[in-house]
Image (cartoon, rainbow, N blue to C red; front, side, top):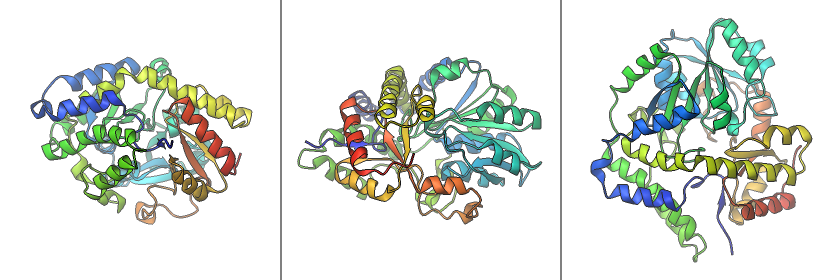
Length: 411
């Protein structure tokens, strides 16, 4: 019997999430009022001690308001890796700042120190250091130290995930950006947060936040549907394809808000998503936070299994195996074929990223990217696929069996 295995769809949701969302649908008076947002902040402070925290409806909204709060000058530069998505670039452009694209290294797919040094100039005031797939960047310490000497602000993009143990012990004074989107390591379907030890910056961000509106009740109803519907779809996936059919119906009828809006796919920052984080999403997130330790243990276990099963070279295994990655990246020579064959077998592998500044089809030139500026990122995008990590070992074995048979691994 086929089982739905996916790196993208409902990767965090289980029965407890579905039940919680159904209960909340029946209690619309609890959607905006309550103390759950503060409870979320208290939980996050356990992982990020001494940080001031502000929640937003999306991670890109959190980034937009943080850049706004920094009060940078027009056309100041923000260093970003070429291996990223529109959610990072659009808030930069909408603040009248210039994205400065830095290439990546091939161990953790994060910012390459040597390319940063080559492209670094006096216009760059911020570095956004992406933790791709939840991996600690190879040159994290060196980049943070370089930024300190140059008086450049570092925003660590932890949208893909983070190790709770690592950041609880971390002493680096950087701004942290989190995302709680449906394809991230923690999901309230939508959501994001900015964390900083700089109280003056926090008060500026908070003053921006209180001016924002809450999302509409109709929109919130559609968001709540996702948790219950996605779990139902997975459970019914093999019941004469009922789950697959329901998924298509909900997409066609647009009953659930899309992760990336039509405006964003055209390269425009969508101000409709720049809103407050409603209490109802905090209640969904608390359900996820309660099982975070268990989830991270599972992810770490699957990452270790992939590392040893794929017989990757020693350096890769040592880099990956002790981290709770949201996705496990590998390079293959036949990316499109592997994705196609996988989907035919109900194995939907991730494709972060299919092009420099995803999603695929986005006008890169419009976002200030010129082909050839980040050659390694461009090369990696043609070969990289992501294996799911929040799955049972039986399904991980099916993934490995499929990869062994059909993928031409590039290591």
